[in-house]
Image (tube, rainbow, N blue to C red; front, side, top):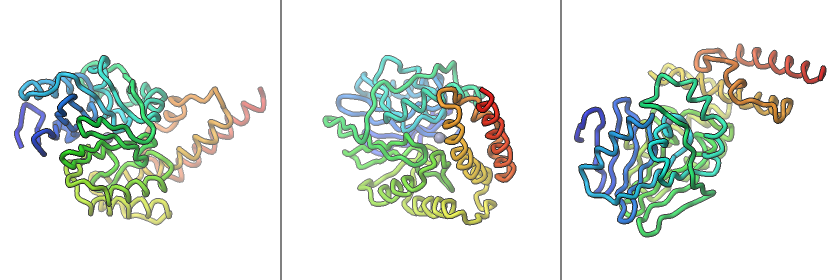
Length: 298
Ligand SMILES: [Zn+2]
């Protein structure tokens, strides 16, 4: 591993490398014969300038193709540095970023690296998109979020999984945990020699199995001792609460229809990783009653 300022570079193959920032978030770079592919764009244009600096030291096709593994803020804020390039994401990645981009930017404004303008994927796909000459493939893999996808470097058998696998537990930001489990089962048998997670670096299949066990336990409502998750103990609480929010979001959307506002709904409870689930449920019930009352008086 070579340390360059506050970005470290792990060379996986002659053409593929992991670039990891000081906050331990990684992006993946694949130097194709026709295009240079960058998977995810970290926290903003300043981060991307560092990637471009790194690129300046190696020979690569000038044309860059950007891939968003999903629309979470820590993976897309650097898109604005590449507004003239192809930015690829699943069709729901574009929709989700359009809907929640501003909310995330406001909620996490202190985390930006440089001035961030929300920039949506300008090329979308549904199940799979392949750059045949470069042997690079993007595959829809919902779970962590509705819009998650993976990038497969077919030539060197390297799979970038974004946030689908995380040590010790993943964030559950999509109510369809059944689809998440399908995706993780698919990853278990995926013909990749190396798998790279955006937050956990190179991962092994045992971590996928542990993530599966965790999701199954959450799905079955089992009580989980989150003290074993160390620094991630509040992620478990956040996961439980996010699932409650999703349940209520559906009801609120039904009531408010086109008046539903993503920002105001998700800002109702500012501290989702801290609040106890019972308390959250009481608050949301109350909110639901209030908007029902307003609707009846209209
Ligand atoms: Zn992330």
